[in-house]
Length: 347
Image 1 (cartoon, helix red, strand yellow):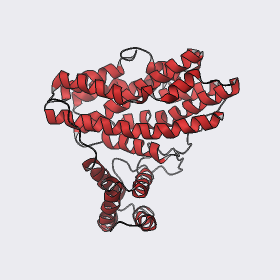
Image 2 (tube, rainbow, N blue to C red):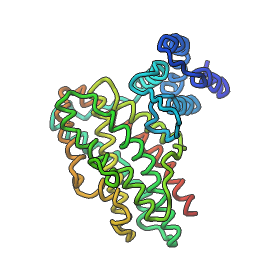
Image 3 (cartoon, helix red, strand yellow):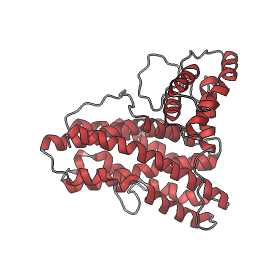
Image 4 (cartoon, rainbow, N blue to C red):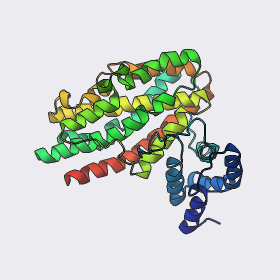
C-alpha cells in the first residue's frame, strides 16, 4: 500500500532531520537504523515514480552534511566531510543513488557497438538530446525586449550559469578523476583550466562573476539553489563523477564537459544574434566558441577518450543509458530556468 504525502514527509524527516555524530562508530549505528527507511523512500521515488517521494529524496540528499559542492550555503565550520568523515551521510546518499541507478531506463543502441564506432554514436546521441535547441535560446536571440528587459534576460541566464559553474566546475571537477594515473594526467587540463591556470580572473567561475558585473549586478557566491530539478541534476553529476565504477565516472565527466560546451555555445550564438558583444560574455566565448568542437579542445579531448573506454556492447549500453538519463534531468531543470527567465522580463 502506497504512503500518503504526509507519511512520506514523516519518513523523510526520520532520515534527514537528525544530527550527524562525528564518531564513526555512532555513524555506523545510526546508518543501520535508517537504511531500511532510506530504501523505502528511494524505492517510492525512483521505482514507483512518486513525485513527493522524489522531491523529498532529492532535497534530502542535496542537504546532507557532505562537502557542499552544490548548495552554496556559507558555513563558518571548517568541517567538510565529503570523501571521508561522515559515514552516515555517505551511506544515505549511496543507498538513494544505488536505487536510482537500478531504476533508470536502460537503452540499447540499434546494434552492438564498441570503440570508436560507439564513441561516434554516443556523441551523436548526446548532441541530439542536449538542450542546445531549447526554445530559451531562440527567445534570447529574437524576443522583442526593451534595453532593461534585455539586461534582465541576460542576467537571468548568466546567474543560472553562475550557480552551475561555481558548483559543477569549481568543485565537482576537482573530485572527478577516480581514474587510473595515466587517465588522470590526460584529463588534468580540464581541472587546471577551470581554475584559471592559477590566475583568479581566468578561473571560469570568476569569469562568470565578472561578466555579470558588466551588466550592473553583483554576484552572490552563496546564493542557494532553489529548484528541486536543478538539485536533482547536480546530485546526479556528483553521483556519476565520483562513482567507484570508472566507466560511470567517465560518463559523468563526459556529460559535465559536453553540457558546458553545447549549452554555452547555444547561448553564445543566441546573444551574438541579439548584438551582445563578446567582451560582455567572456565565459560563453571561453566555453562555447568553436565548431564542431570547442576552441580549447576540452570537449574534443573527452570525446576522443570516450571510445577508448567502450570495450564491450554492454559498456556502450551503460554510457548510452547514463547520458540519456542525465539529459532528461538537464531538460527538467532547464524548463524551470526558462520560466524564471521569462518571468523576470515580464514575458
